[in-house]
Image 1 (tube, rainbow, N blue to C red):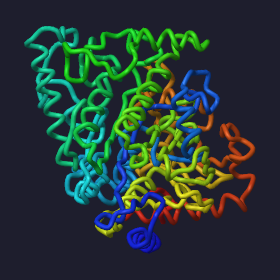
Image 2 (spheres, one colour):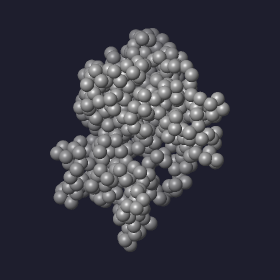
Image 3 (cartoon, rainbow, N blue to C red):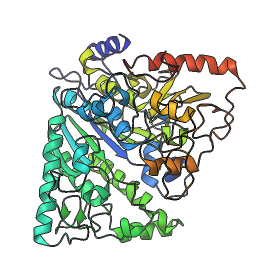
Image 4 (cartoon, rainbow, N blue to C red):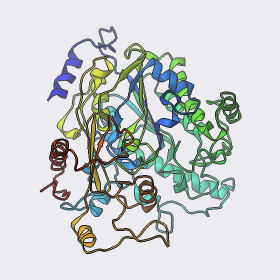
Length: 524
């Protein structure tokens, strides 16, 4: 109800972004959402990283930095789902998700969450309200069945070592790319190009298994040019800093810039500085060569900002920079803060005061209602949004938007306040019975000792590395004092019942909003 009242107020009163016009009293802002992959705080200089990121430093200086922005899940697909829908990933109802998790069973949220064509998302809603919408970059939110290589795949096949410069091979690659383009458009996008179906390895070609920011930025510029009369919304998702590790420059700055997600492209791209120039400036700044990819990403963000300035649209355009989740230490594929808490910057000259900072709790489900709020779109029940708007934060108000954040991944669930984090690990009844009988579980590495508990995620690779860096990974109840132990190294569960009980009550209340989704005693 609060959101609806707030939105109606925006519709009938002047705002910080309103323009004086008798015909158009409120000008809808352009929105560019730049989403990076596996980006932790140590990949940004202004947060203390030993990297050279001058444009992102400047973006934070001239805009709003949200210091405690959290994601609802800590791998690609479910986090992106929340960024695009405003819903918790455990609310997904796609056919493939429901086949794995029929009603009445516990969910194991990870890279099994997809958008649904018959449910709302930010692009579809904005498209219906006068926006031109664009999608460039990594997807990982539709048609997961297409990602499997083999004779049953709808994608045209070629050898892993095939040469993209072979005309017949390249024609297959280009047709596969066009299939992704056409598959994404029905989800609310007028323009789709520069697509990666998921990660680079899902192209199943050694030569294409390289990052190509130049190609992605080129496509973003194309959409911006086509849509500059506005309003427009651009979802721009980079493959950096996901694997193959861009620290190895053969997969990034020293790769052939003609190798793209659509195969071999003869024409060069001129929107970014040359890759040699990136390496040179990184060295001149005194940074290690294997961290030059951070400057490369920085250049990409800077180029988009400069393009908006060139078109004199800076006061009409909100530019957002974020990561889908972290990767540092016990981060990705866990519900610890190195995975949940991500860098988040918003730039909007003339509306957001330079040097703004907000330290309150926020979650990525809150982005969609915020964007609808600033676009003057009324919140409707059929949008099925779990988040809340934080538009007032953009206006400079120091308010408490939320006092708790919830997150889910695999067999774990978490509740977080400003000072405390409680993580619960619970297993479906069948798995728990096996544990109770002393059953063992397979490890990721062959020949390694069997495990007493299964990995939290189905992906044993992620489970292995997350558990190796986190001594509390398998513990069923975990409590961390974020004020005194921000790295969450000391599990103090059992020592503070006065803290634990209300946190478990909050978690239980939240879990019971997921109809027909048991989670041990917390949903009984």
